Image (cartoon, rainbow, N blue to C red):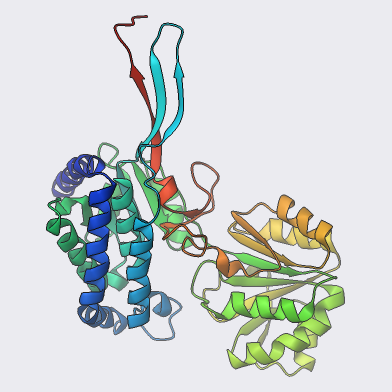
Length: 415
């Protein structure tokens, strides 16, 4: 524990030097990092394969863990995109001069040292490092053991980029995966300024219960799409299929289709073919089950109460048929994790009511929940999707890695 706290202390010292580095240097570091990701892609993929070899290919997390040449290229591009964003630090939010002549400014400054705990997502290592370096923050990373080999080589590459530009490698520190050290991180109030958990509900609950350091939750995504009575059914099918199958292991993928009873038969008849091709297991309620059974849908189970409010992270979803719009809103309110929710409707007033009334970090009218993403929102990259309401909500990216400082300039004023 004392060794770990000493490392945290070094990371805090490194954060102070990074905060003074400025945009030109931080961007140069990130440009070097992007180049190194491309240059060393073969080595990265070799290490990633070591992690993949330890995980069954049908495991829900396998896709999250897997890197490919295309994904590495996208990762390098996301690093470059961060360099093109405005520096969030040093922004003057307000200024005033008091009657006594004291000049006051409220300016943005880095948070300091950001601790991020995450599971099976090696891209998070690069995203967090890029965002923190650009915003003048140091980072302590605690990745899951599933991605150990991948995380080690990625952090080594980050360190190479830092070293090339004369900055300490302590700016980005990768913790060992020993579970007991998580408690050390969560209680290191002297050295860590904020903790951001990114992973399962169990991980987030542990951080919520144990952390003495302020936390920003990037919560589980239990996402619904409501197909309303006036919905264009073809559009609804396209949206639902995209939200479910395009990448089912991520937090913005669909978990529950909420169907107005007037659209149930037509929608289910049209969704059977694409769902069958992707072998989507459907947990159907008492209304949708006999309809799908009559359509000979092959991957069908009766839904239990536990299948609503469940984050599937796989080729699976639940279906709930409701009698009217208020019932749809009530179901979503009861089971949503307040991540991303969508409505498919031709009724503008109904859509606007949904967008205003549904309590979630992102809400959509006639669009897929898969858009809830820092890159898609033009934020470059993200640390996660925050489902809480304080400090950050939705894609938690560069602009939120700052806090505020009041600066006073006087000429001898006393109170």
